Image (cartoon, rainbow, N blue to C red; front, side, top):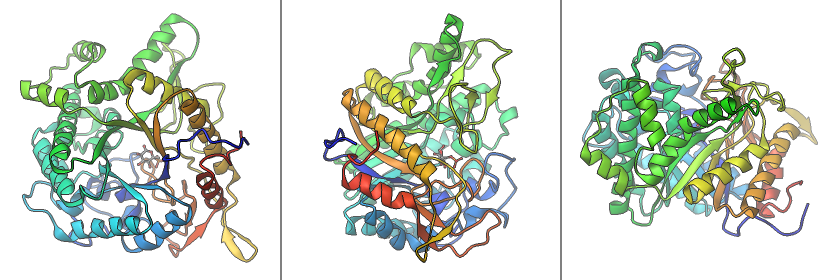
Length: 473
Ligand code: BG6
């Protein structure tokens, strides 16, 4: 422990969530169905036709009714910011209507009221894996350019309603994940194995144009707002010093970096255009699209970071292991979580430096955390979880954030993923817990939904109160 902080005084400490993973109330308040209502097992099985009772997200952790209690707990930890997403289908139940659902808008007014009451800055994701189902079923999601207009209308409603109260906005969660999870990330109904590369990359292009249009709308309607892109960061290290492995790792990293390049520089990089040509992809890109991308670049770059992977050009060694949505080649130097995600705190410092060197834009770590099984125990008459493993994970990553700041990287803040236990995105489990707050709900849907503070709750409160000085180095 050192006695001076490397974190700036205005560092935005907090936690992150997404509507579909916490709210529940899937058919209340005029909400329409979203793709999450037909994904009871996350991305591990194909979608269902309609909603099914085994879908934990129908109730999730009931944040829709318990938001005040939960935000008060975040405030107790000293959160400066709270990242949540707005469920598109609460605002536009079908997605293609012209008039928004007032009851949905009023819900987020109340959430923002609670944040303001506690001096917590809201950080809002406009679209986090919850495309209205109607847009998926009728338009095949983002493959269809019509979604650009529907999203723009939705974003404009949000900026008009909340723009004076919400400063930080993210356009699409982990936009690069469309490449790997087209339904969850792009609302694309066509099964992945039948989806053409041209349709997939067109969907990505359509999202990028929509992101630029939202940025443009924010400048008009919410001039004090700052707009960020959000990418899934996963460094890919060469498995060996063989130059072919180094080139392979660069190529893999560029499948993620391209998204930051386009959001920050406003144009497709040459390596991305080459990759499209090599894959025989022919996109519809209008002159207006090009102008929009160029003129509406982001204010900051946000990203999720859970793990790194290795990469190799040697096909016999290229065995893809588990990991956040895409996974990668196993790195023999690293340990893994219970779900096989390889733990690499130094990778976070590497990503921060790489992104800063590349884009010179403020960076915001909007997801990082450890999914682990927790056991509720009684200590001094209170129920809690002794989650030293989670504390170790977060501590070691935050130490590396401090190092990156000392390296000169401009880091705006850090929101730990799943600051309260929630339903996992990839596997739709409750038992994959990330929170500082334990929620009594099990994979079979049983449980009281009561909240309990874990050991990490108190640990994180100390980290925030000391602005990182209490971290163990
Ligand atoms: C990110 C998503 O990919 O990782 C979150 O933005 C997700 O929605 C998080 O929950 C952790 O992944 P998982 O599959 O463990 O929930």
